[in-house]
Length: 104
Image 1: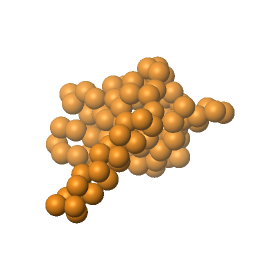
Image 2 (image 1 turned 120 degrees about the horizontal axis):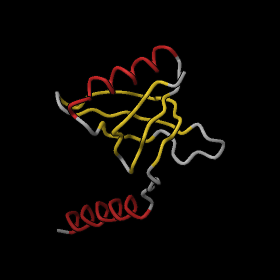
Image 3 (image 1 turned 180 degrees about the vertical axis):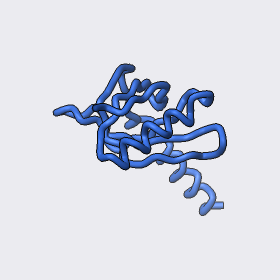
Image 4 (image 1 turned 30 degrees about the horizontal axis):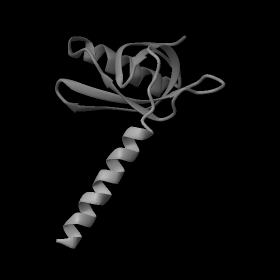
């Protein structure tokens, strides 16, 4: 019983800690470096991005590819940026990325 209470206490403290320190991002366009790109399944994907501003709003943060009907185009843009060493210009809102373009 004591072990179970300790596990629940640890889990609760981790959850509360992650909520208390969760970083919110103002919605808008950001120039980013792509750290990692991937898919979860056939209809959802993600990208880890880092803001390139002098004072970054976020670093190495995961964003969900938001619109499943254009996910292939989003993945293509992100993978092109990774393979060519270019940055992307992405519209971000919290953990969602509905639009992304390769920056010239």
